[in-house]
Length: 344
Image (cartoon, rainbow, N blue to C red):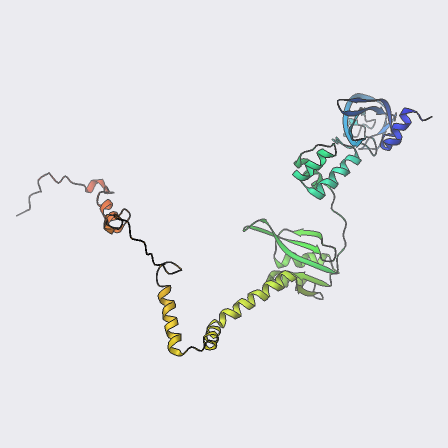
């Protein structure tokens, strides 16, 4: 027959270093009350063993759910004195290996689940999925979990991708380096000049092909930092260059295309001249298209005012300007006062 505490340890192997005191169900949460077993704990600063207890305090750790129910570990931890008088930490808190970290409120298993959710779905969407998994967290908590994760290890790829990205569009730009074979981002650079890219390539040699953007700074940086590498342009910029060249070529031969189309219709030179005059007359007015004729009678009362009577015209501006006060008040004279006598 298996004891209850042994069954709990089998379900929660990370609790093997703890002394389980009570397991109960309260308010829809499985609560595990436990305490530490070790009598002596090493100080993290000087690695000196100590068993002098300063105080005890409670910690609440969220664990992975069991049986579609959330699990909460209520751990009673100790604060101990450091026996080394030279240690700057006079008092330290004990940590359970594989279960607790400083200021941590989740077990390693629960933290790994949240990190996986955050990497896959990021903020709000990850928060909705975490609520279904009985681990409700905010979007900022998921983002902090992603930023706290260490960068994955990588090696210098044979095919290196170089492109720019905007930290603030139109003002601040950087460079992102990508492994084109695995589509894994490798390293961001703070700017997109040639010296920065060349320095990175000097520090990380081994790239045989550099798939870069068509910027001249990237071409110069790749030529300086990796002179033996082959530079190619990615598919997007190849299509963009092809489209730009085709559009420029069509615009250059626009008149030839018009002449060929007109000659194919069998028109004479006089007909071509009349067609050109018609086009000029069509676009002579302010709008891009000719005005359609209107067969309906014009309503009475429209168009009876003179253009000078309309507000905002030149006449109206002159009229308003005549009533504006002068800027220099000292030049204003009283028209009713008698004029000064002229000298004889």
